[in-house]
Image 1 (tube, one colour):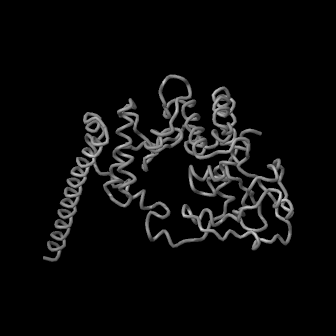
Image 2: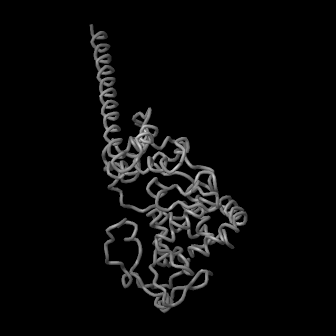
Image 3: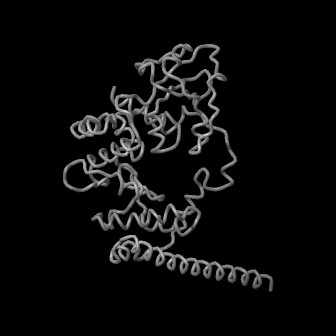
Amino acid sequence: MRKRGLFGILLAAVAFAGAAVAQDDAGFQSYLQDVRGRAIAQGVRPATADQVLAGLTYNQRVIDLDRNQPGGNPANSTNTASPPFAPYLRSHVDAARIAQGRAKYLAERAHLAGIERQTGVPESIMVAIWGHETNYGRVMGNFDLPRSIATLAYEGRRRALFEGELIAMMKMVDRGVPRSQLVGSWAGAMGGPQFLPSVYLRLARDGDGDGRADIWNSDADTLASIGNYFYNAGWRRGQTWGLAVSLPSGFDRAGTTNRLISPRCPRVFARQSAWRTIGEWRAMGVLSQGKPWPADDVQATLIEPDGPGQTAYLLTGNYRVILDYNCSNFYALSVGLLADAVER
């Protein structure tokens, strides 16, 4: 009797789970129809909406990946300790990535030089972003983007964001992007620059002159799109992103503490000092580790990613532009350092 009772409980649990899945799928399909109506109201052609949404099913793996991201689960948000930068730097600015970056830098000079003339964004910065995002186009993701984005929108935690991206994806198809091209990361990023659909609509550019912004198959289009992103984010022509420095013994860190709280990425900006001019940093005894100094009137902040006694960095306003692409100090520092290594 006990075995039958346990078996009965298991059957009931399986039946309940199946019913829950069916109910959830029904809710998902109902939600897709609602989105279809809102997309059409925004000018998407009905045939396009049907093409993008046809056959989509809820993807639990996408939700699991999202919840396992730092900050995606409240259980993960209590750890405020910062890991060391050095291991991250070794894995992201290694010999292979530098060598591949130099090869791409040389191969694409004709396109890169033109983009830099137009935007002021250094060729090496564009290459470094490309290398960090997709290993120079080698790893762009294999998730069906409409399914992933629709799942994230339906889940509800960031519905406004992802529903907007789903509709933007329909507008991409209306502009001529093939439905089959909509493949990328589980979170909706795509192509060499890993743009979200709304970013693609605003900033993707044709770099090879064929009339299309094909960030999946054209290296020139990928680089032109990255350059356009940085230009629109406020990159200052002729100014470096930053430089590695050494601090003198007895350096007064308390005197340069940043007392402002950023409304965006507060933990990222909290690790940086208050702004001072390059001239003021030099007067405090800060020494460059070899890179030429920017002009004395350029404003910069200081960061010590591995703590006192290790390499520190002075960061200009252009560093903030890299943070606009991905708001992580480790990411932005490694992009800048890879760019420096690529153009040596």
